[in-house]
Structures are given as C-alpha cells and as structure tokens.
Length: 296
Image 1 (cartoon, rainbow, N blue to C red):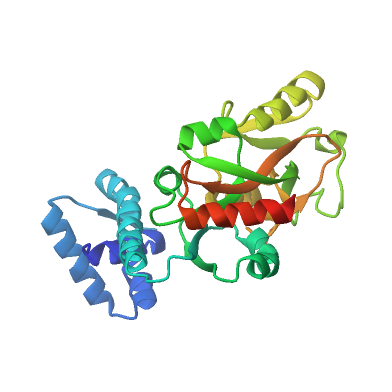
Image 2 (tube, rainbow, N blue to C red; image 1 turned 90 degrees about the horizontal axis):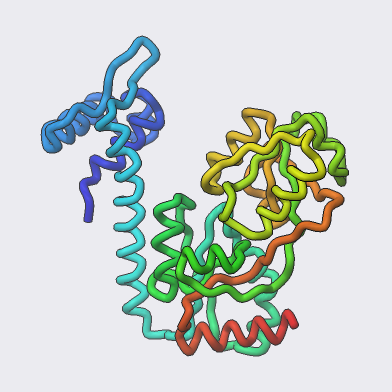
C-alpha cells in the first residue's frame, strides 16, 4: 500500500548509516544504497548528506522522515480496519495500546468483565504514540480502535473530539532517572524538588496539570518549570538524558526502564479511565456499562 523503500529510508535515517540499516534489514549495504538512490530519483529530492560522522538528513529528508512514519502507520491501520471489517464476531472490543496508554487496567478487570459478558472478546491494537496518531485515533474512535485507556480531562476530550469514562483518579507523580539523586526515595515531599527542573505539559493541555503548575508558581518558586508539547517516549528519553524531573502517573511506571515513578506529597490528581467515541456502538456501550458496574 506504500513504497517499501520508505521503511528502508526510516531505518537508514535512524541508524545514520547504510551498513547499520542493512544489518537491521538483513540485506546488503549495496541493496540499501540502491533503494535510497531510487527513492531520491523518484521523489526528485536529495534525502541524505554524507558527513564524517555518517549520514545526516537534508531538510527534505527531515520533512519526509516525519511524514513517512505517519504514512506507514496509517497504511498499517488501514489494513487492520479492513481485517476488522471482515470479522463476523461483532462482540470484539478493539483496545488501542501504546507505551503511554497501556491496557493493564483492562487486563486486570478482564476476569470480572468476562464473568458478566462472556461473549465479549478483547483485541489489542498497538499504535505509535505520535501527535498525528493521537489526533487521528482519538478523533475516530469506533473505526479502527474502540477504546484507549489513559489520563484525560474535559479540555482534552473537547480538543480530541472523544468521550471519557473515569475509572479512578491517578495521583500526579514524578519520574526521575534511576541515577537521579531522588531515585532512592519511595515518596517525595514538594521541598525535595527545590532546585530541580520539572517537566510539565504546556498550559491549557489539562486543567489538573495547570492547577499543579499554579500551585508551584505561587508556593514553590524554587522549582523550575519546563514546558513540553506532547507525551511520547522521546520525552521520557529526554527526562532520563537531561536528569530533569518529569510529571507522570503510576500507570506509566513501565514506559522507560531507566526511569522511576515516585509519588509526591501533594493533593494533585488527574482522571484516568477509558476514552471512547461520543456515540459508541452497542457492543462498546455494553462493555462500558459492564466496566462501570464493576468499578462502581
């Protein structure tokens, strides 16, 4: 459904080397170079610059890199949608999963759900947590994916054009590198963060995060707040590499093996539950009612 040379292009860009990309693809470096030459010829643009440190993307290459990831994922999702359309069994709940939206809560509830609705089955649909995917998936819940577990509030639901069913309130915690000075703590006081840089999602992303931000600005100015735009694995890598502190929730404790999520002695929480279409299907509605009866 898409030019397979795009996948090779992404591997070369990530590896910064034709040889390393060839090893990952189990083909020869000559074959990789040939694919890239053909791709550049077809597109009419130069994608790579050779430097003494390896390959570097040109401006055209950087632009294609971001789009290629989205194109490939969208095509894979299209195939999944086509396969789902052929499913004779309509009692399937398609659960979107990513590092930031693990399905662990539903796995834990599954025995009780199955006892009340034995006809319902789960199908996990993994996706890459990028801004483009988040926008498209949440806006189109009910098509390829029925529900996604995660944090939310009314602001985010309005922006993403979806609905949310709250299962619990997750305490806002802090994630730090396992090498950070606070990593040996089991619980933090706000004063422990004095002198640290705390990474928070930008203002107006969440009312609950903004309340934390305002509390810190007004009462704990010794904490330096650093804004970022989107939760992704890259942000967790940035936290580990920079030694900054990252606002997180307990559900993300397994996102990055070199980060530790630690509770903090403040009263800030955020809703956690299931994101779904504003008008869910009959099966999804029955599933949500079952989860509601279990959790309430």
